[in-house]
Amino acid sequence: QTVVTQEPSFSVSPGGTVTLTCGLTSGSVSTTYSPSWYQQTPGQAPRTLIYNTNTRSSGVPDRFSGSILGNKAALTITGAQADDESDYYCGLYVDSGIWMFGGGTKLTVL
Amino acid sequence: EVQLVESGGGLVQPGGSLRLSCAASGFTVSTRYITWVRQAPGKGLEWVSVIYSGGSIYYAASVKGRFTISRDNSKNSVFLQMDSLRAEDSAVYYCARGVVAKNAFDIWGQGTVVTVSS
Image (cartoon, rainbow over all chains, first blue to last red; front, side, top):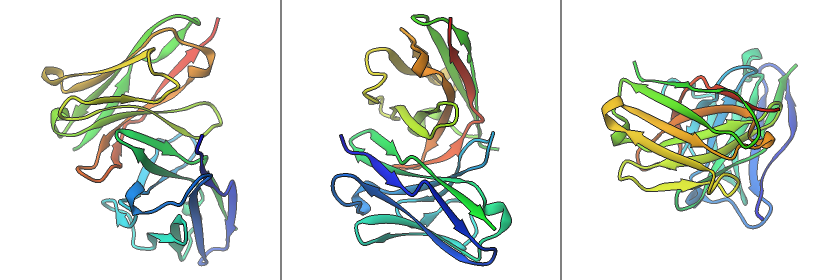
């Protein structure tokens, strides 16, 4: 069974740039999978950052960007801020009416 | 304001049933696809089910045959009937609104907690 993979954890310095990735245990992620990215802080509902690979959701600052890098989807945060410290999940549309999420990346800003 | 509000969670014994509600405001549920996503304690997000504006319905393999998604346009709400509940169904259940033609979700509710335990 195919699994969506993400780095379990990542660290970035304030003001720095970090790229989180989203892959598949079998195959490559392409725009066909309509990659999306969600941010979640403890005790809160997810917040949509990016959909359709690289479209920012309403109100999301432009320091968040999405892309395809090689065979993975990627979320890049430029100029990381303290309140970017969160869990980040990618979502893939894997089949008609079926989605899968990655296990999430815990981002630390320090 | 566009908003989704879940309700109906609670404590239920294994094998029991629960019906979750997702009430929408600021938009009409019949014009968007609405999904349910759950998150077990300390775990990641897991997609559960979706109902499209045209009525098509899909489920994750882990809940197929036990959960039923439905919609009541007069109440502008979507429901998740959960039967034959198991301990592993314990989670926060979120409903979310689909982005038109983009296979993603843009608005999320605050979630409702389901605990399956004897």
